[in-house]
Length: 225
Ligand code: DC
Image (cartoon, rainbow, N blue to C red):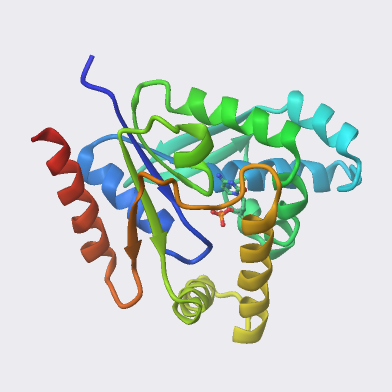
């Protein structure tokens, strides 16, 4: 087996994690694991089953009997399967995004997600992106990155992305969403978003995807020396 290579990329919404993580995975020829997609999938299941988002016990039971698989398709695109059903499109909808925070703060949900995330990376060669990869999921990752960007830039990126996909959104709405997710990600008691002490901090404001990817690849090359 090739040497283990676990790369942890954390950061707030709109910091460019998904695109950069995908590019790094492609360039290194290793797996890409989008952990936010997993939190989105379990949120979708809770909403569909009309489980109260305040009922911690019911949600813990629900997550225990849930399976989430990620499959690479095509050019490092990712399909997300919830108990065997392809939910790739549905989990990106706003009603799902707005409700993830209720599940992401529950210890039982996070514990199960960590199990699924480690299982998805069992080949030992993967780029994982999320909020707690370098601090909780893989505290022993081979390389850790914390991506950030100014709030204005992160809101603009989200706005452009959603517009491109044809959604009729306005900037104020996106700003509220980004603010609210930042606050709940950073202030929750379990696994809050924070930079691991040994992570490389990259401010992506004004940088292109290629520039950020190059910085990470350069960092990886220095590991070999
Ligand atoms: O990366 P994303 O925006 O698709 O993630 C959706 C939500 O999931 C995000 O608002 C916070 C949560 N999340 C988390 O709590 N821990 C992770 N490792 C990844 C995502």
